[in-house]
Image (cartoon, rainbow, N blue to C red; front, side, top):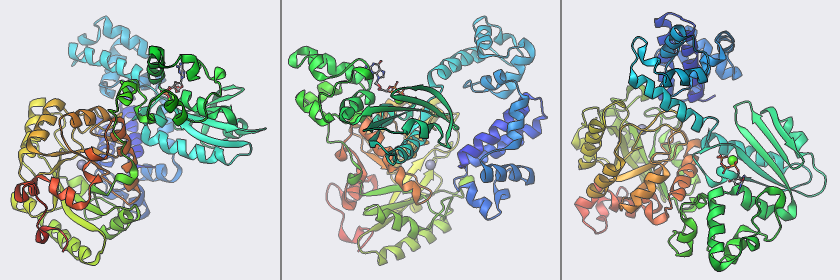
Length: 589
Ligand code: DGT
Ligand code: CA
Ligand code: ZN
């Protein structure tokens, strides 16, 4: 169980206790621990193994026991009991963005409301604003929250859907009678949040795919079963659709199930415009009508006189015409990535040593890696003070002397403090190879304040990259009040690089912002922000964001060899002009 899931469980306990009318100090304790877990970047599982759960801020014996149970069994008897005790309608109300447990309790007490429908009606009838401590703003927030909920309910982050899809593909592929298994739908297109996991299974002869998958340990219930389709829900609440298709009809079925609807419509409009008729496209209006009129997607597009359109582009955003006119780039691919410019080690809140991270990066074929710990103000993440940073720089220099074909850059992820100052002195920042500046506090500031902080950081001579520029946590925390257009203008003006943070919890900048950044001539770096060796693989999510933003290798900083990366950094541009780095100033002789 990850820190995030633990944090969710503790926060839910706190909320349910609040709904039950528990004392405020007790409720607060759960939320404090939940927040600590959320920001704690070392995995609690590791702390548990060492018997150190109580080192988490706000976690005492009682909470440590509850966390231990979650880690060991994946369940909590306490939480399950609380869920039994609180009416389900009130729990639904907790899920409304902008509505906390305190307000739900108040609304329930005063208006006797127990369902979302009643809540919406009360808000529309302007009954909420009359409650103590609430106003018309609260009422509006509730209505907006209800809208958001309707829109986002049941959507699953890519970071959960992709591994699940891969696991199921692998398992189904091993079953008799199965010729091929692929993911389809929005998951194949790489959308950051997907409605369900669509899997297409090619079959030949008799097969028991449906029977076996219905009994899968991760499957909670079978939602629907038809001759060639099985619809499931997992214990984690993810919907999975499994489609069976005769082996020789795989390609058209895959094309159809990948969608999107909007892309298929765009293709039909394009062909209706004269080149080919919709019928010759072989695109049916439903799966049953699928005709095996082409044997691969490549063949279909080429028959239409189009270059291959990758799934990430198939969103009906003008990609067909853009492909026709040659305006789509060669898509960024994993092999293009030459290094990772944002990782943490056990110097701060990471799990692994510099050497372990370096070995993992080399194993992925990288040429360089930037170590960028948190700075001292970020206490929850064990941020580095100046002494520790200098010690780390020494160690990195030692490691570099041993390495033949790889360079470790000594960097920092320096905090942009609430007043816009950086968390380390200029001379320290100047002495490093690379500096990322990020916001980790003061999320509730006004747009003016947030933009003043970002502007100060971007105008700072030693800030090369802005990390996770909008601060959003996917499906959990909205961005802070960033004016994106202004951010992009400033990045272009100051030559500051913006990050696509590839952590699937973030994906920040998102695909639309990335695409706009390119239009502004801003260079982007796809970084994992990995806190352990395994998470270096999150690069794949960042690549997906870049591809969906119509970006190619030339738009991404870390597709360049080290010299090219260094040349693009603000600190070096000033020193070196447009030329190459002088030999003696390279991090390695
Ligand atoms: P999602 O699941 O909401 O994140 O988005 P999708 O795109 O995966 O949508 P989904 O799962 O409902 O259907 C998967 C694909 O199947 C979709 O991208 C296109 C195709 N499809 C499904 N129903 C229809 C339909 O009624 N018309 C058309 N043209 N295509 C459909
Ligand atoms: Ca889908
Ligand atoms: Zn950060």
